[in-house]
Amino acid sequence: MTSAPGVPFLKGHGTENDFVIIPDPDGTLDLSPEAVARLCDRRAGIGGDGVLRVVRSAAHPEARSMAAEAEWFMDYRNSDGSVAEMCGNGTRVFARYLERAGLAGPGDLAIATRAGVRKIHIAKDGGGITTGMGTAELAEPGGEGDGITVSVAGHTWPVRKVGMGNPHAVAFVSDLADAGPLLESPEVRPAAAYPDGVNVEFVVPRGPRHVALRVHERGAGETRSCGTGACAVMVAAARRDGVDPRRDGVAVTYTVDVPGGRLEITERADGEIEMTGPAEIVAEGTIASELLA
Ligand SMILES: N[C@@H](CCC[C@H](N)C(=O)O)C(=O)O
Image (cartoon, rainbow, N blue to C red; front, side, top):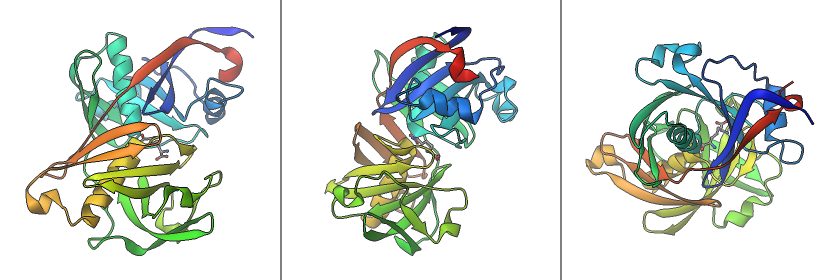
């Protein structure tokens, strides 16, 4: 196997949503969808749910307009090579990389994403990282139902449509096992409700202000965690519990258990959502040229 000098990578995860991190400050790397899929392959590649390419905002056409606010752009790709607007766990891992590389914090920073600028706070001494996730877009004022359903493993549930910069369908189920092995994409109907595909979350209550989920991600399949998904679930669960911080003028925090750990999600009285969780860098090396060809 030959190496491509000058193409380093790191591997990191947040609640076991794992990523290949590629520092490419000047945006010179030609990262094709096929190369992303090879990098994320868990048998023949490095393995990951996605790729985080670290590019200076000023050097990327999609981020140039955000460069004054955020020096770094998170170019996120799903493991199948598709492009996504936003990755919540990815923002924490991205920030941890910047911290480790001496390019940021601890403290406050902002990063550019396709869904806009996201504000981050890195706690001191390797503690949790908080991302300002923006506000949730809820399709309907009333609640779940919305005429949209998701079917998998012989079950069908109504879903709540939530936008977190990327699309989510949240289904409350009586048992997380009812979603089956999730080896294939759940079928969302009508398909036209999500013209660009969808991330599907299955949710059960665990206690007051406490839920657990499984997620099937667009472009990646079932993963161990999804930050935007956890935020979508938090908002859907709060509305189901009759809680709306913008109406009530009081922030609310939910604990969201994911298969790979735990996230704390707060919806503030102004509607802004903040997600706090861990992020770790676990390896670094050099990418073999065959993977990037
Ligand atoms: N795991 C991510 C979401 C990644 C993008 C998603 N698969 C999509 O296509 O929208 C997260 O932590 O938010």
